[in-house]
Image 1 (cartoon, rainbow, N blue to C red):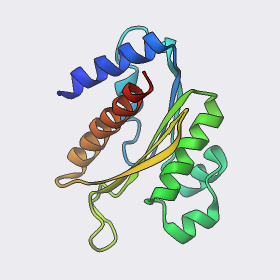
Image 2 (cartoon, helix red, strand yellow; image 1 turned 30 degrees about the vertical axis):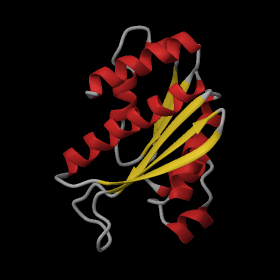
Image 3 (cartoon, one colour; image 1 turned 90 degrees about the vertical axis):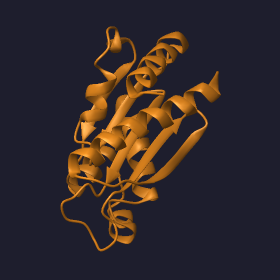
Image 4 (cartoon, rainbow, N blue to C red; image 1 turned 45 degrees about the vertical axis):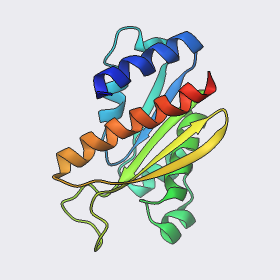
Length: 159
């Protein structure tokens, strides 16, 4: 399914189920929030979003543990989940999506293209690792597309 189709389907589900959503983005730099708010009536479900590029922002706004950042790194399952939970709490949303990854051009050896998507749903926290290839802009676009797809998948299971 194309991203536009997935986005429209997610939009419909959020409206029909009367669920709210929030975002916490690092590597996607606001692209996910922009996609979620690109359709009419997005204000019915979009609570807000944070672009938390710096670790200090992850800690202060999203309550990500400095210990976890040091122990696991900002690009990890633990931090992606903490970012999603932090966004859910900050905005009081039903769902939350977080993105964190190495889009480049620099990254630790072998880690370029590693992206974690954290999801908070009424069922709890999950995180999904992606291994993406290509230029920085492509990695960010693919991470946004995958975040939408994974959220749609999770939300469809709640119906």
